[in-house]
Image (cartoon, rainbow, N blue to C red):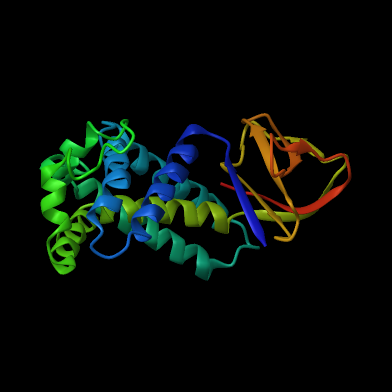
Length: 248
């Protein structure tokens, strides 16, 4: 199945963006420092947000409060609920005790700072422009791997917090099978308890993709057909897909 996601508030959007960059880090070929410079510079941009740690704490506290409300319902399965509550409380404890700014190690890496000023130039990361990168490209891959391992370890708390929040949002999705008449589907939302995330699932052999917009009041989906040339074309037939709305 092909899966598409859309955030319904800015905090969820920030989490999805960070997850996307962390996924790029995971795909870095072992010891490839050049490949690592762009995603780590982007992560440093996220870490430069002074409210980042507080945003994570507030979001985890919000999720914990929602789970506490759920726990009062006799229909709730207590075991998975308690497991989520335990994980949230543990992560909150780590975040509250963490006083150092996220990305502090990255800020003191000369090669990251040098590459930062070259990112907007085509071919700006060539060895001729960055002698320090030329030095690292001639080192044993094991040495660069150790360096990158330190960078990754310095962001573990941030990554684990992002992963935990998004995992809970996804796990809380209520799913339904819906039809998009003439390729369009929309629905109103309860502004008192709007979902944080929309998820769509469709057969991966369908040659189309969704354009999603929405906020706390309603959302709208338009399915587009991918074309070899030019912009996607709006689909005018009925598209059947699975729709998931997070309950948190």
